Image (cartoon, rainbow, N blue to C red; front, side, top):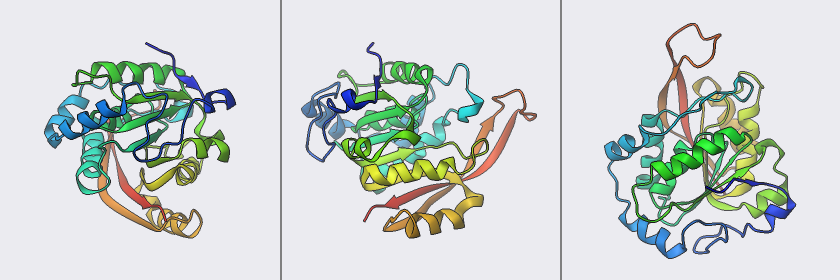
Length: 255
């Protein structure tokens, strides 16, 4: 299994613009194979969730990165909504910012998308690569690549090279580093050409709505769904076996 790319100026040279209808040099499968799989990827919500149930989580979550595995039912509902109510993933180019163990990115690839997953943590990317192989229900390899990079250090030149139809992200909520979720959203706004899909605490809704349209320049900011993120006990300082957090699933439309 190949190691993830490290995103530097040399790596940028091997990444083509992710425009609709264009193939990219780093895609694991040909554009034709991705298109065919996309046509076949008419998958019911329950079937997608069943597949993602087997998504391998973080082995040793890093608290400083606020690493929590995206729960299978949440990932399935997010991807199913995008696939059936909005852009869809059939041959759609997608960047998964802070992809972690890969639940969202791998799921999007299963539904026919052409994906680049980006994460700062090499350990997480190794798990994501494993999930891309183990969860794949198709004969062809999934059209997904992983890049080792710090999302917060993606300069405009890199974002231009990464241009994609859609950005999906489940960012850190900012309990360790205040405002980091907004920084993820800022980077996403520089990459997406159609829409950004992101999760944020419901308590920040008014601020997110205002900041997205007034500061980041999105055409529209819409809460697609209100979710309860059932957070299992992950770190030593967690006192409860599970805690529910109210989370908004957002769609940010690019102008």
